[in-house]
Every structure is written in structure tokens, then in C-alpha cells.
Length: 240
Image (cartoon, rainbow, N blue to C red; front, top):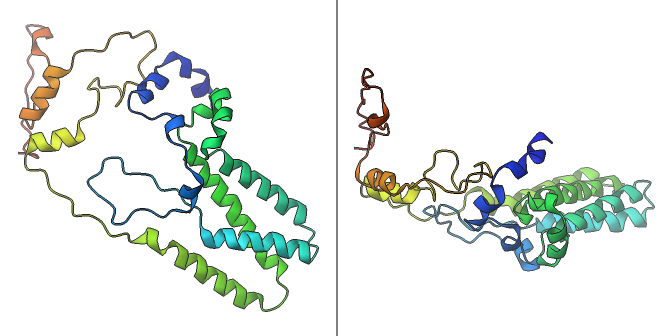
């Protein structure tokens, strides 16, 4: 709560917006909820495309749970329906159709990525799927083993995806260009935690050029040191 109350004192919104990290650019279409990650995975991407699918097997089991619970008149049927409704609400917040709701709720916008709701939705759907066992009266152990095997089989593509060959940087400048943040201001990557009263960012072009040409630059401005103070720069040979 303290962090939420103090958010208006920093430039979170403008900092994230400068890099495209805004909620209205991160919705997932219905087809994306059933799409597995593109293979092979490109290890050279700093921010690879996020794949947020639902487990097909878990969805099937959760549907069977609702059907079986109603068929056998389960005493937990109302709780299962509540879980189903909560799951649908979480899934709706992931879709582009929910943008009107996101536009009207600033607190919801602070989550930045709508696809984050795939986590709680998947958890509730998994609980629904597990409820299938309570509706089976015979051969429960056999059905349990089949269910566990099916869930494991469904998750195999996520365990060991093939990867692209990662090309090693040819020199320090090449590595620096890959890792260089948008702003070199020392507080954060995109200035999202700067106080709102800061209107002008320091010029970091000189610092950027030094980082591209020197593997171990001296980051201390010795011109501002007192005359009686001496500072020694210890050479770092890690990237040389």
C-alpha cells in the first residue's frame, strides 16, 4: 500500500511508456491463449515474445469436472461454479475486449501487462481440473495416473525447447551495445523511478561513447574532488 500511495511522486508511467511497456500494447487475443512458444527460441533476443497459453489438458479436465459434478449432484458444485466464473473474469482481462475496463481502472493499469492474469487464471483452472477426482467413484487411482501423465506430456514443450545458437560478442563495444540501457542515469533503466519534479535528464552521450570504447572506464569526475583528496583507479581486466 505505501508503494501504491507514493507512485504519483515518480515518473513510472512516462518511464515505461518510453519503451512501449503499456497495457494497451500487451493484450493477448483468444488464439494466443492456445499458442505454444515459437521454436526454436532465439537466445539472442533481449526481450523475446511472451507466450502465455493455457494448458489444453487442464481445460479439458476442468470442463469434465463441471460436467461430472452436475451429473453426480456434487455438494461442491457451487464452489466449482464460483471458481469457473473467477477464471473467466481473469481470462477476460487478458483479451483486447477488456480495454474499456483497463482504461477506467488506474489501479489495474499498474500491472502493466494484461497477460499477467494468465497466472491466477491457470491456477484456478488447475484447481477445477483437480476436482475431477472427487466426482469419480470407481477406478480413481487409474484415472489419477492417466491425468498426471497427460498433464506432464502437455508441459514437455516448455521444459527443453530448442534454442538458436547464441553468437558471442566480437568486442567490448559489441557487448556494450547489446546491454546498453535507454538512459544512463544510474537510478533505473528507463527513468521510471525519477521524482516527478525532474524535468530534464542529464546528457549521457559522452558516458555512452566511453563505455563503447573502453572496457573499464573511470567513472569518477576528478575535477570535482578536493585538491587534497587522491583517488586511485584499480584496473579491471575481466572484459579485456
